[in-house]
Amino acid sequence: MTEVPSPCIGICTVDAHRVCIGCHRTLAEIAAWRSASASERSRMVESASRRAQMARQLETAASQPTADRRNRPAVES
Image 1: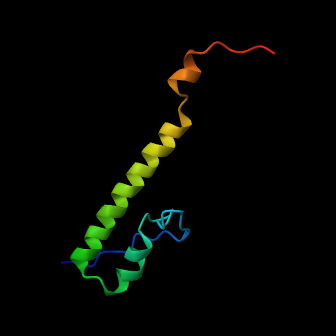
Image 2: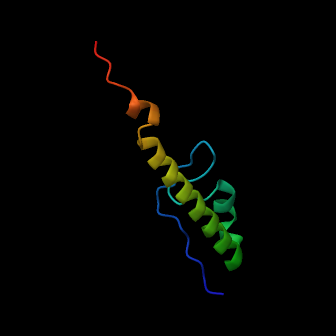
């Protein structure tokens, strides 16, 4: 199996769930990276990719107005 490149993009900031907001790896995955085999690294990259996709979906959903806000008339002061 070929070498799996690190997904690190140099942001290296961990959120409240102990996941890097740059590469989306967990702290455990980051710590294990150096000694992990290529297949283990591939699994870590796949897991991080899924977490990144979920994070993008949550960000998109959070930026969309809710049905309640769209259907309410504007309130005048």
